[in-house]
Image (cartoon, rainbow, N blue to C red; front, side, top):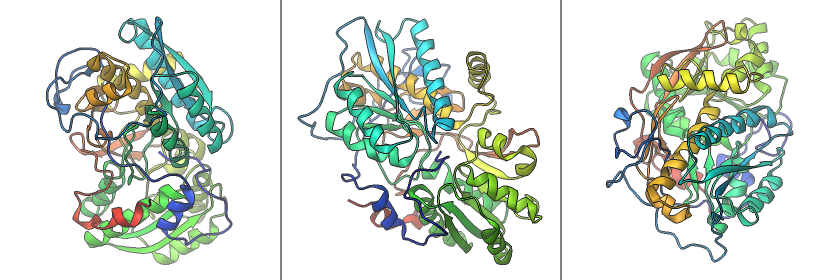
Length: 463
């Protein structure tokens, strides 16, 4: 989830730069890397690759699971092996614990800590207790890069769990590839990326945005879309993916607007929405811009009944900030809600609120951060080693019964099979699920399985 600002250069007013140009602005780094492997998280050693029938805990698959093993890649001469010579093993937790992003990332760090504590209480991993090395990215992308390098080269951690925004991920990606480290990234994102050194535990496009578009058109009969987003890589790339899908399904785009991150004045855009008369606003605004947008929509009489929105970056914490009465009746799409009905989630919510009583709600990135630790544990135990290449080779096909439902690592892309969920905001600030995909959806970060997306990869991925 790309919830808060800071993923792009600030500007004033709306912007119309192209998605491809914006990717280049947001990524003055090395080329986006291709190819991948997998990972895992385990309470049992029972072999399984059936996501729909996975049992409690993580399950290490020992057979030829889907696309097992990492893609072929020459290891850098700078590769650093984790230090596992003693009775403990270090892992890094790299999140913004200060600055603008702290409001979102701190709770993800807490969820990862809870998973570590649970694992240590049951003996650790391969007989070693996990020692978390917590670093503050400070909502500053160069700091993320510096801290990532420290964790890999000085602390010699076996894995890092962290980042939130796409820019933080793209900033540290070359560091993890240079030193052959492992990053578990817990937030939904725009797709069009794979790396042999990143496991993406959040959703990619076909596990969030694309299903929401199809549901709006096919199930709700809403065909006229107004696209509204913050001006940075995630919304612009997402909307570049939405437009051909809407056209293929017989819909139309009646408006498209972007505002700077942190923008607060939406009266002009609300007037444009009223004039365009869309059936639905597809919203990828981030952070406190959402507060002002929805309040200004309501102020002119546009409620969920009159002008429904589908949001991809509003979860339980944002509902509390905006106000449940303002958002009631609007939709959002995720893979997890606090109200998701699974035995694992009942325990997860209760345990988290007991351990961190000052955090009133759970949400999708917290859940993805939590189960990412268990997936790493399962991959290590399946590999019988903390060696990064062996862990990646072991990871494909590992399953875990996460709070949001069963997940499985796709060995080819190092993304997860995940269930898609659409919810409507209730007056109490929680989501009521109105649709789900029925089973975990195979990740397709480049949308190669969708005819309407032909050519998007070449257009959106720069090198």
